[in-house]
Image (cartoon, rainbow, N blue to C red):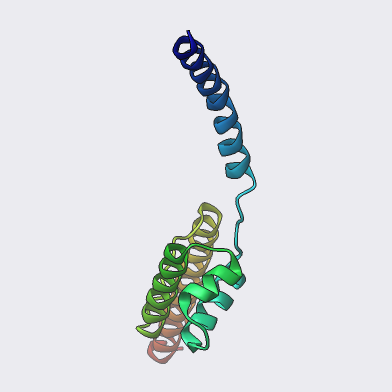
Length: 132
């Protein structure tokens, strides 16, 4: 009799435990820390100084070591790309439209100046040929 009651109690506690675990997981997901770029840079630079171990730094900052190492790798790769002169980035649609409009306007200015230059050259060479 005691085995049946203990088995029943175990099923009931596991059934009640599942929604509680789900609730805790949801709360943790919603309250997860989001570090700004400045915070990540500060932490990575602190780790590169080497004053404390990475494990101690991560404990103090409340982050996982894997997060530190991924931020560190990203930081160093970005620095390497920047030093190599790779400053390319994806342009937004508005930027592309503005650049196309500016290019169109500049082409019109160049065409107008070329036309004026041609007319000036013709007037200068035509003036010397005039018999009057």
